[in-house]
Image (tube, rainbow, N blue to C red; front, side):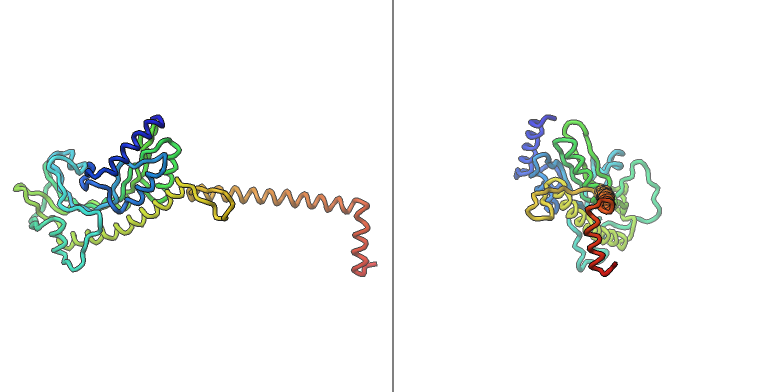
Length: 297
């Protein structure tokens, strides 16, 4: 994609973000938790965000076709509960939390033999995901390296030719548990206890905390990687960019070896100079004077 085409696409995407019309996501707008990161990235000339989710907890009923039961989407699939914030558990009993998540569903009695048509209800925690369109491969690689070093291990570059797209994501905090089933009458029946569902809610809240921490860390690291900052020495005029920990370790090692070699060469030159001083006649007098001053005859 040419620079002109990238600039045109960025302008259209930014116009969509700023439009009061809801976007295509179920929520209809960018999650407030990720707005600072998205806004900062979009100030960079070679970057524009395309889609994002700050992370969410949800209870999802599978759709009616086999593809939806694998992908979590499809005809008839719907959220029974979804939130991009931790669940407010203050003052609520386990039963109240379970009803909030799944609804006032009854408990299913007996064992379940699933079939191809069985529709399950999942309790999910999903971490932040962010797609970033870049002008060139170098920019995409800088973003990817930063994301990987920050802990978003499942990140990658899509469409490496033209304008690469970076997908930032991590499955380390993800959670997906089957908690209920839709019976033949179209009613939801719990497969686990209220206490178990309440426990999942509390686990989800803990993972929200870690997810927010990772978003904050990613925001700082991308700031360093994409927006150059002044070196620590004020007024030096030098600039630096963020670098991966392993890259920095290798660079420091190389600089240390270089300093050792420079010191070795310097000492060799000094030793050679000292040797010449002992041989040259014009050095005898200063040496004799030092001996006399010390009382040596």
